[in-house]
Image (tube, rainbow, N blue to C red; front, side, top):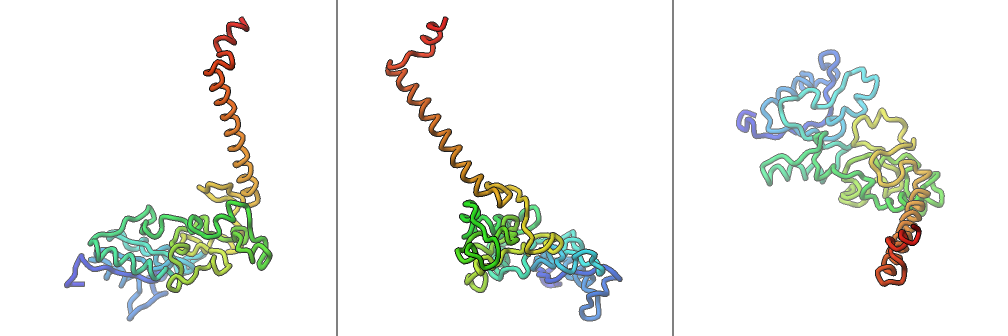
Length: 263
């Protein structure tokens, strides 16, 4: 800390409890929150590893008797990079540090202080089951025909449409798989307050900022009606274009002639 004052990175795992003067988490005879403040004081940046450090996680779940909080509730005068996930993806963790070492600057962050290069897209955006969502093909119950066909897990509580992470692109265990590919919906573990947002298997009724309908029961119908509408508009435009072409060729009277005749 003395040798690299202002130029070292502090990686923090876990969240500091504030109740009872921080005595719910003692490390080396001192409250974790006190040691965190001491070590972070001259850091170049603080990296919050995982959802506990980033958002508080289950320790901060209501009614949170220990008053566990995220790192940014304690550290406010040093740049903070949040790398949420329970746990975070190994390649994402190393990617953040590699970027800082390579370019000697912090990565671009979103409004929640997450690196955009890993958290700018929802899991839903790159999920290989997305086509089934758009087509209105869903797993209705575990191990039904839709599940065996690899249909979308949204109705089974998948939080992919509202979860920002690199799981669908990076995978886990060296890219072998990720929960949705293994047949289980995303629980949204990298999102703030995911532990207090209801049961993991409860379907989200409304999804913000999706191209498809927010309700899974109507997304298939909406997709079909959207295609039908587009076809209808295209047909109408084609008719208008053909009429205009025939008028230009003299096969049909012009609008001015029609007006004069009606007068």
